[in-house]
Structure formats: structure tokens, C-alpha cells
Length: 469
Ligand code: AMP
Image (cartoon, rainbow, N blue to C red):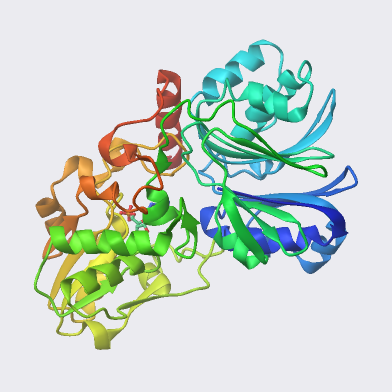
């Protein structure tokens, strides 16, 4: 999931800039997207299921019209939550006015909060957490002197990992959870418009220069009078940036906590080469997120990097599954080997992660069919052993292959010659030294930075079994 917003004083084509910002953040969510334009306090909104360029036509963007501010979101979803009604931003009319809300992440006390509010008569129209967050804010707004103070008070109740944006008629507000689990930064354009984004790559796309990250627990308020920072929730908890942002989630051309994601991935590849060396002729990367680590592996090992697999760039949500009974090979539609790189070679295949193991089984067959002599799989993430409750879609323990099998057993299952994972201690060294004060690596080491209420664990297990049915 990703948030994106623009704040200016002049009337501009903010819908179009938000469209391109969301387009740059599409990798963070493909289920639905939405844009709300604020023109002198009047909100114009459109959201739907689908990719950014499928949902927003030229005509729709024109209809959203000009404005001084805009808020956007891309969202990924699992079976139930990807329903159209869950698309963001969510628009709320409350007793003190209106607001639009967009978020990235997940609350660990969502079920608890929702029940508390429902028992007091609140009605929810979606299963989206942003609606519960909006409810927490609007309840505080009844007595709080401003929307930012209402957010500040609501944050006492919100537990988990979230990057949040709220647009009121006059203000655009960005906030990050106390551990800073997900990234959020802002930049400025030459004309003075502020741009707030989950990742810095989208700032570059719309011509904004990076200013800084929003700190863990910080609320930043953009108004006509200037920028205000509220730090009541800062330094309350240790910083715990999700390390999977570096390994998989973020785009390589983004910087997080002062570190290029591309360099962090290359570093992972170098650590991997040191931990799991093997004699081979070529190092290839699984497109797209395995490529940076493959380059790092090649640099460290001295084995040449080769272009071994090509991914069809036009595969998106609209991919039509050919089903079981047609001749087309599903894997080959998405991914095709380059025989000149593979044939008669000892190949090291670097992928960003092994979750269920299904990709590895398919890719190994693809490489064998293309004539690979040996195949050594290297994962630039450590073994996935635990579910994530903060918004990364990782399966439950019974789906995670590393919970059941050793690397040697996995190699047999995949039909590979060997399998090696990034050592756990190395994930804490991926970012720029001294910048980030700490990482969440709970999916690898089980050390969650927050309590996980039993109710949320049950809800999670329920979600997983719904997806299986
Ligand atoms: P698997 O086939 O289940 O082992 O999944 C591993 C592949 O899925 C890797 O190649 C990743 O690029 C990709 N992947 C990793 N994490 C996620 C995620 N949270 N959502 C979607 N894909 C993922």
C-alpha cells in the first residue's frame, strides 16, 4: 500500500500530479487506487479496483479538475479486502466538517478497536482499517481544538505499523507510527508545492526535491501558514523500519532512511556471496527485485552477472490465468529464459525471497529446460519463519516453506543443486550505517516490535484460510 499527497496554495492540476505519483508507487499495491482533489475546500473524488492507468482515464482526471491539494492511495488486497468498497482514500463527513484519509500498513489492534467502536453504535461500511482510523480521529475531533490534535490523540489508540495521510478542507497532514515501520517522506517543488509520499521515487517523478523523512511518531501538518511538526509520539518507542522494504517492497530508485534501496539490495547480495559461495559460470537475478542483489553477488564473488530471465513488463492484474487445461505455460508467459546465458552453464539464481517456494520450483524447471548444468538458488532474504501483522502479505506458518524444510531439503524439492539464505545478522546491516536506529525483522526472527493481540492473530489465521477457500 502507498500514500501520496500534494499541498500547494496556487490552483494547479493536482489530480494529474497525483496520478503520476501513484503510478510511480504502483509496485506497493495493485488491487485498487483513488484520488481526492481539494478545490477551496470542495472535495472531488474517484476510486476503483484496478491499476492506476486502468482506473484513471484522461477524461476522469479532467473531471477531477484543478485544486490546491490532493490525496491518493494505491492498495493491495487479499480476497475479501480487495473489494471495491475498500479502495482508498476514504471520505468522511463528521460533525466538524469533512476529511479524506489514506494509509499504508496494518493495525495490530484493528479488531479490538472496531469492536469497541461498534459497541458504542458506530457503523462501518468497509473492512478497511482506514475507516477505523478515521473513526478514532473523528471521535477525538469532537473535543479536540484542531484536526491535527485529534490525530495526535487518536494515535494513543492506534497500535501497529502505519503511514497515514489526512486531508481536511484547509490542511494536509502526514503521520507515522511510533516505531516508523513503513516509510514516509516529503519533498518540495520549485513552485513551492509540497509533495508527501510513501517512497522518494514518486517525488522525483513529479519534480519534487526530497526534503526529509517524517520521523517515527511524528505528525507533520501542511497549511497555508507553513509546516508544523507535532512530536508528542516521537522517541516513545525504538525505531523499527521494516527491513523487507529494503529487500523487496520498495523500488530500487527510492532512498529510505538515507540509504538507496538499490545499494541495500546490492549489499544483501554481497553478504550472500560471502555466506554461501559456490563455483559457477554466471549469476542471474529473478526479475525484478532479485536483480540488484544478483549484481551484488556477482561483484563480491567475481562471477560474471548475466541476463538470464526476462519478465514480460505488461503482466499486471489483468493477467488472464490460462488454467490447467490449456497448452500455454503460465510461467513462460510471465518469465522466459535467455538460453545464451543459461545453456550448459552452472547458474547462480538470486531471488529476493523464498516464501512458499512455488516460484523456485517453476523457475528451476525453466532453467533446466533451457539447458542449465547446475542451479544454485540464493535468497537475499533470510528464511521466512513468521507472519507479518504490519501490512506485508506473508503467509501463515503452515504456508512458509522454511518452517517445514531445511535448505538441503528445499534444494531437493525445487530440483536445485543447492539453496542458501542471507544470514539473519546481515539484514541489520543493509541500510546506511548510523542512519536507521533499528529494523523490524519479525518475519525472520519473530521479534515483533508491538504486542500482537490474540484477536488479531485469530483474524489473521481466518484471513489466510479465507484465501485458501
Ligand atoms: P514464493 O513463490 O511463495 O516462494 O514467493 C517468493 C516470490 O514472491 C519472490 O520471488 C518475491 O519476489 C515475491 N514476494 C515476496 N514477498 C511478497 C509479498 N509480500 N507479496 C507478493 N509477492 C512477494
